[in-house]
Length: 188
Length: 122
Image 1 (cartoon, rainbow over the protein chains, first blue to last red):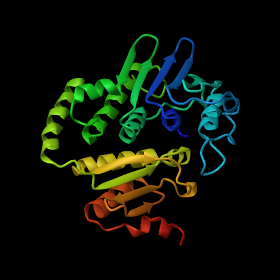
Image 2: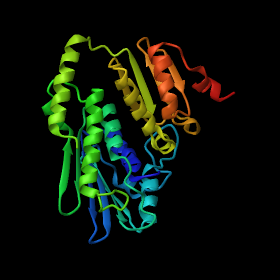
Image 3: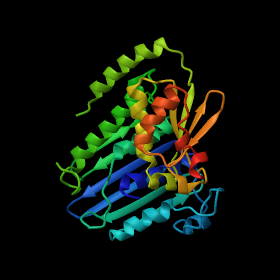
């Protein structure tokens, strides 16, 4: 994967496959502790503890097209390359949380990438799920919640192309406001 | 800076359009977006569809995504399904190819044969 927003897209789809109705995404960058954290939490069906133990193994997968799954192992590899780690916690019938952290200033830490595009794609494909995105730099926070947006829209569907494009730009404005000058790849 | 006021304007504008048209979706664009598709560049392809369709005001086309179709080496894969269920599979898509597929296939009904899966194996 070229950037973190692509990893996020992949992990969010795992949550959707697990029948989540609400997915919370938190991205927190802290210059002081030089740490970038990404967490994706869902209220899906969760995993059995046996499967969870083996979840970062590329040969552990639930899909039936073939016997490998690379989403989690690739995300973990990206975290490890930037002196970070990945943790998955899950409880059957309650939900799953995938957390990855990165040394923010590490030369191999992937750039955040186009988070707006990720949100556009996911919301367009699965509009009925509630998405809650929080960006945090330990001073200021930005929040985007798809249910709030739907309330504002009334009868206009959230999948309307103009709305989807607005969402992408709104999220990327949030990224610039919160992470500009904090993540090195984003100018303030 | 995008504001919520702007969203309100979009809402008002599109509300009028919605009242004018029937809500039938004539076509579906399905983008393969599993790990393999994402890594191969499926996300910009999906966004290019949104961009092109919205430019041409083609609100009767739905854009969605699916998991791994099983031909990872040909990703990004896009299926275009018409209202009778007829399906055309495009492979190794790029945002540039999307512009052509929208203009020729979706608007004018002519399949871009050289981008299809049938051509890829030759």
